[in-house]
Image (tube, rainbow, N blue to C red; front, top):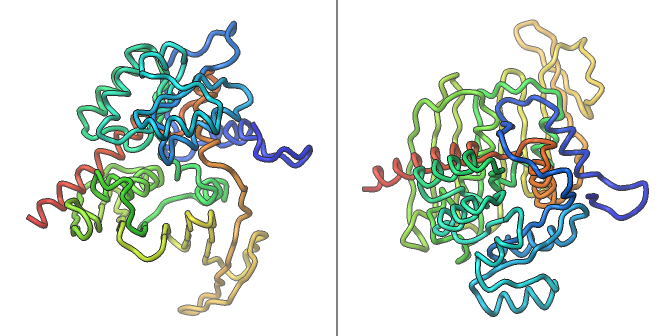
Length: 369
């Protein structure tokens, strides 16, 4: 699958995924033991459960995929289902069982409260499963889905799409040994009804938790957190501080009561400062180097003298690849089903992000009484 249709100017998603997965970067990729497609069946039939905000985008990506077939979709909202069927000409099924009977794999984009029941049904019928984040509502449910996927030999992938943000992909290719000492994130959004059935920690913060867990190669040591309810009966603004065994500290802020969208991460390590803007897909790197050391990627440099030592600060702005992150997720899902690679975000990864999110939510509830 390619991003652009212009000959000679395409970005091959399959090639990009293969390139990225070929690199070792902390604990980002875990190869599961799965039953792959037989060689006699060359195309994977993918269905979509739920065609709301994200589900519709997933469905359109499946329809446009070059090596997979769209088996159809199911949605409990009749008005939405009628519109989607008319606009896409995709098969509309009246029940989950009917969709599963026509599919090899399923993308689930339903409310979080339904993730476990729908995911369980898919895996029990032997279907590969792509589950939107968070993987489930509880750790027990997540553990059961991970266990079922292993028992059935099926791919279980979780939709933490920020792992495929161009800024994050660029950071992985920047040839910087990542040993963060301090990470700070801000993820703010104007209020909207969608997603408010869960606390902001499970709605927004979990994106950053998954990215942070992929950046820090160390177990969580302890957590503190607080939050407040503003627009809903749940927590709408939250702040958490996470200490890791290796000494790294992460300070994470999320809010769904803001004027503008903000999605930024700042990473500090010895002689390196990195900023990531998830909205712009932008990565900027500041390094402190010895004055006589060359940096071919530096756009700007400034002298720095301290205690008689001659050094310099250099600024790098790595080139970005324009990609459709959801399409790249799908490409990776299909490749994992075909046995060509591993899921970028495995069921175990999704489970770990959920574990940390639930621990933070527990700390908030203890703090606010």
